[in-house]
Image (cartoon, rainbow, N blue to C red; front, side, top):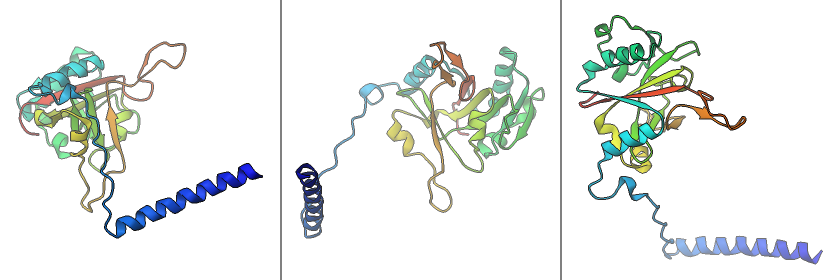
Length: 224
């Protein structure tokens, strides 16, 4: 009984102390300074090549990359990726204008459709919010134009970004997450580093365990 009483007394004393501190701050006592987050120097050191670091980390994550000069070159790059890997020439496009408005007529051999995926699309093509150099990570958010199903249901995921979207850190990427017309944050933000994989069963690496088996990034030198 005495032990229980002591525990209760300590809990109540802690609550009273917290209330007292809040009252002190309301009467002019400054709030304690927030700690500065620790950010790895890998992507922030003076002179670091953010784009070069992104390419290295993307390759380390078992993803592939292609670079094109302009947005008009993207459809041909997608067709080349599919042909080089003997993938079916059929893709599901994000309704977002950064992808849907590309000149797909320049790749007539590729069959395109647009909208969210129902799980039967071999390859999707979507934009991204940003790419994080420190880990080679793609930052993807949900919206009417960028359904999350396109990020996870197809076997191959092709992400199209501009070079200006490659940032050093997660903090830089989060600052680019786009709010909706009402100012609200998206319901979902996903950080994707390489293809989906798992080695939970028998320590055997299985690609595509929880999402695409392949992640391919097309970097556009100009704007999307």
